[in-house]
Length: 114
Image: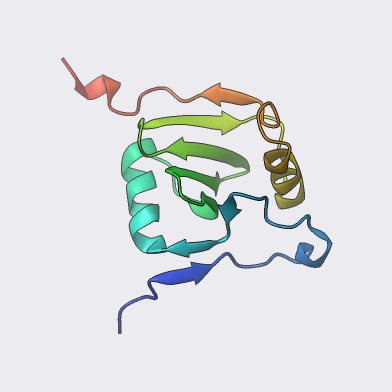
């Protein structure tokens, strides 16, 4: 049997206290296995998916203890510096522009190009 095409983000122990999913984003992801594979290929990081942009091309994921933002259209990524848990993530994303402090990821394929 193949994995589900739609998956809800698993809730953590503090989910009942968490801020709601920010407007314009969803925690219900289409083809989560495909997205995780794409993020691994694009960033070199193991991804635990957190949010996907509604009508957009951005994903937010957790790898290790850090949260990351990946734009599939521009193939650019950033480490989110001011978020340490899901509640902070949802609250800061809900603030809109300027809510996240970002550090650009190095281009994962640079060392392979001539």
